Image (cartoon, rainbow, N blue to C red; front, side, top):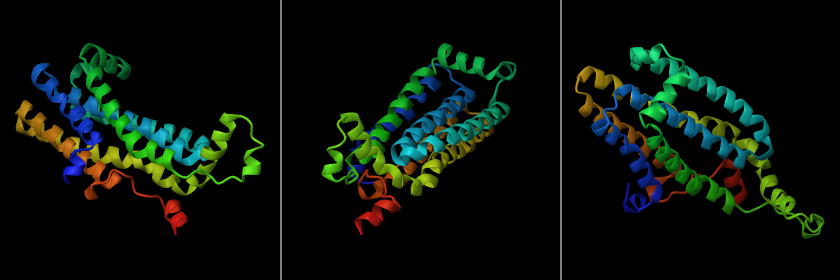
Length: 246
């Protein structure tokens, strides 16, 4: 990655949000289970902005895609939490309902602070690389005489912007699988780091290594998705956009 990449705000928000858990490890005594639940909650954040991306890109098709995604991703999150609890959960966590576990960790143990930073980090990336790209896209070409018949400003916006997303059906597969790709890579890295921590019996050093691996995985994902390798933070054009420019 070159200097232009490091000058981008989304990279720095990603680094700050991911390095903040080190404060919890060294100052507040967070254990591996707390860190794993934090990064599990990041999956929900990824899913949330994935839904926003589907709403923007798929237009009217999102009425069908979003409910399906919510159910499927919710099942994925549930199974993930069960496995997380089984591998890394302390005895007290296994005797409580998962809502009670989350309430304790988020509000009593202060997990809401890094969660808020992660939400801001993903929000900045979403705005820079998804929303702004969608907003700057050329709107649907409507004959002036037809547009003149639409008097409501809101109706004109919907006609020019959202109707343009009828082509989003061709991207449905990519839109639906993008959050999974990010989450699977992230948590594959975390599971490797988590088992490494347990094997080394050196918690703080192991936690630092696990967080470093997670940062590297996230940066790699940002580079791959948004083509950072050439210094640009513009997401790769869709197949429909490529055909439109030919």
